[in-house]
Length: 222
Image (cartoon, rainbow, N blue to C red; front, side):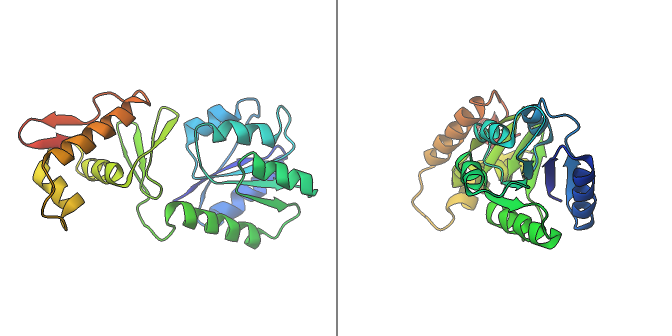
């Protein structure tokens, strides 16, 4: 189930949005305060953000810009201000779409589904894997840990996915090599070590050390 973060300072609007989106099968969360939106975002790790333009502390442009420093999560602006400059500014700050109040809820839901489909492959039943605080987004190959996010290559993500699907179990090197390069008969065994080491370095960049354990002569585990 996808998590939607609603950043809207009008309680009646945020409550109505939360209720409707829950009815459409989403996990909807409203922000209780507006001075620490980024912190709430990092703790919640939503799949999509509905961002109001006019907020009590800093406006939606600011918070979108802050979110974009660490995440590519889809963001839809919701605002009563439909001037072209507001739309352009929102998109320039990193928003993915803009919808003007009052709006048809079915239009909003359609926009949400379209963005989620493009970002996470909406038809997939399993969108995330989590283990020891580490979250792998299968749809876009992002790894999140303690509020930090990195992008993985296709092979790096595949390695981590297999290890997390078999958490606390040793995955043999032969199994990983077959999963990654089963159509190539000439892959050197060292290629797997190179990919695993590259993956480890990326994980260390978000302070995730020793997540992947080596079992010498056998394989790897998380």
